[in-house]
Length: 120
Image 1: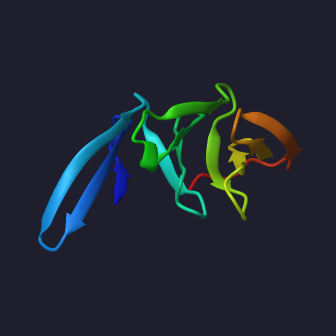
Image 2: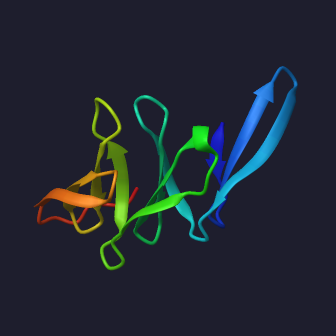
């Protein structure tokens, strides 16, 4: 079980029978608004309230790597484009949809809906 705290800390909780073990995986120092696993569960996207997207690879147990930083146009949500885990799509509060190459954070395409996306 992966979850985050308001302070921007990614936790892993291993549960077996009635025992559990907690581990801090990453500290990105920004509140995390969304956690999304890739379809093959090898990559975890961490989307922050401040418009930054990080990737975290659980099998590598390394730090979260900053992939995207919109600064002025905050992400509302992001998700992987299936199949695979090479691409993701994001939507911003201002209504811009973007497709990204996850390996280096290259923006491949964008579409502006010309409408503000409501935050729920």
